Amino acid sequence: MSDQFSFIHAADIHLDSALHGLERYEGAPVDEIRSATRRAFDNLIDLAIDEEVAFVSLAGDLYDGDWKDYNTGLYFVNRMNRLHVGGIRVFIVAGNHDAASQITKHLRLPDNVTLFSTKQPEQVVLEDLGVAIYGQGFPTRAVIDDITQAYPQGDPHLFNIGLLHTCLDGKPGHEPYAPCTVDGLRSKGYQYWALGHVHKREVISEDPWIVFPGNIQGRHARELDPKGCTLVTVEEGEVVNVEHRDLDVFRWSRCELDVSSSETADDVYEQVPAKRIRCCRRQARRGSPSPARGHCCSYSAARKPRTLAAGIPRLGNRGGWCRCLDGKGFNENGRSDFI
Image 1: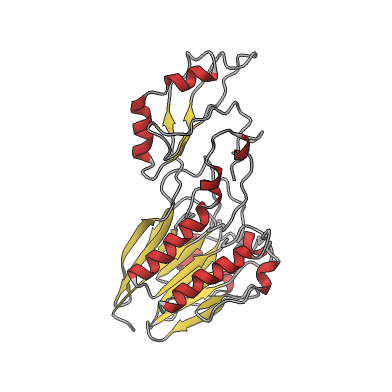
Image 2: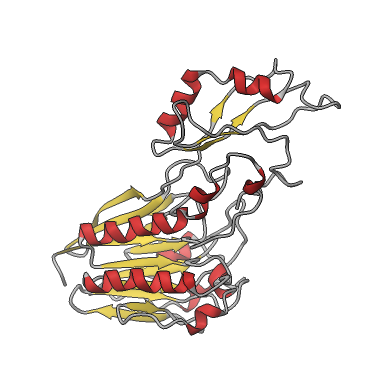
């Protein structure tokens, strides 16, 4: 067993995910958002090379359903080849969005990439590191069974990692796919569970480590704050450090503004003080849209409170893009169209 090594745990890349709704707002940074998932993934590749990690584990939803063309796949293979040159291995399980892609099934991956079976759990042993990695991908978009029940027991002589795309015991806003329990994961005797599917970072447990790294790039106004991956360091068979690393290039944050006295949308713009913009910039260091929420009682003829949102990217001296949404940016369930 290697005395020390590190690896990256990432998930929910959603390469080239579709953008719906934002184009209709004048001045919106459409191109920045459309290319953001690729640029964030490039940051992941750079981080893996700079940190000289032993391997990268991707816990599902690498893609975002079927591609419009083959360029998404060619891009991914090119980045895997960069890791191949650096001697970095990659381990992937397919998530629910990956299962919807037909083109993916014909993509030829470099030798350093292992794509786990979708039929049953598989084990890959890295003899040089003393590591065993277990995983199973989604054969179809909707997996409703606990597939971890078939995962093998951990090897007591190895450092064991479980790779899994799951909702765990249920997470708000996420489909209940591949449900399982923390106790069930613990029973396998693994030292680290690398989970995916939930877009918000969360450390579920530290004994053993059970981690959702979140997605690497926020894609709409509900996916707030820094996004990235988890860098894990192992010494003598024990996890000694688990660290979040930012990868996002376009960040969504929230600033609360009092717009109760606004008569029109223009009034809202005029009431956004410079100090609020500075606040948003501090929250989103790389420049990002930032929703501003409040009740504007005279905004509609029916005098119903509306949700207002303002975006402030890295444009202009005071933050170039600021847009009020009169509710049309959100559907009847309150979900953002910007996905």
